Length: 351
Ligand SMILES: Nc1ncnc2c1ncn2[C@@H]1O[C@H](COP(=O)(O)OP(=O)(O)O)[C@@H](O)[C@H]1O
Ligand SMILES: [Mg+2]
Image 1 (cartoon, rainbow, N blue to C red):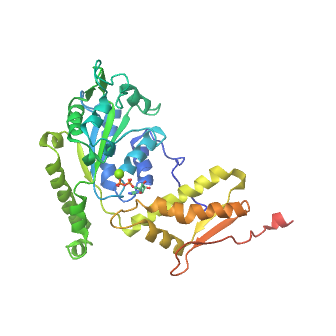
Image 2 (cartoon, rainbow, N blue to C red):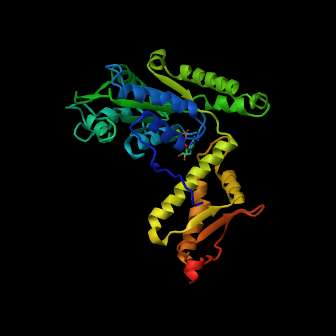
């Protein structure tokens, strides 16, 4: 696969512009156009200086089944907006299931036990550290929000409403230049039921808009049950991610294989080689790494286990620079098979 598009920027991609943003996101996120359409306008409004005062630049709730790209969208936005997926402040809500853990986000007030030992996680300095020269917007991700203690939702209510957070030491953190993302798979079980065979999905499969709006209403019902009306009212946009069909999953595999090829090139330099995963090998990886339940979540692990680990062994045995390693999977095989056809010398080399 010599024509790789990979995770890096193409020459035409100009991240500062709205069309550059859209193109950058579309290149990285497969099969979720509604999500990208919802996010980009908020950045445009901010760039035009028209964001409302005293509110975050955007508050988004991303819903939908596991492994459909919710977290990946936020990482991709950080990469497109700031040049690196790491330029985001991520709060993994599973780590804040108890109220005393939520208190760690803001730190204890002076005089309280442990004041000196607590370093709040949501400080202005932390927000400032994830912006870049390209954009002043900080991206804040509260991942899997349904797992957090209710006190985190209460704390967020103030942030979403006034764009400020008071820390334990009474300093304020300003979120006016922040895009706040909340992800959740609330309602995912209900959605899975809608999608299961015999539940109308077969009949609706050819009618994507009807299915989307059905899933949306299932998700919103779960959100309304879990969060207070004030909380729901403060969200700018709620997007329901769609289950990924075979074509999208295959495109995601393409992206990941292209990323791997690029990684091989950058790590091995002059010693690089090419990787070609044949159709049977791709089918094998898709079977091993994707499922209706987990979407594309396991794909990376399948690539690691079935492709990267054996490749490392092959490298140890020696792969000629410039060679092409072909990976395929004969019928009923439980692993990928690798071969390295001899390099054909060109007339010039032979001379
Ligand atoms: N729509 C998508 N486009 C591109 N990659 C995706 C998509 N959905 C899932 N993936 C891949 O699967 C992995 C897991 O997806 P993730 O965004 O974490 O799922 P979730 O919706 O559960 O947050 C990502 O890191 C990415 O590699
Ligand atoms: Mg996620």
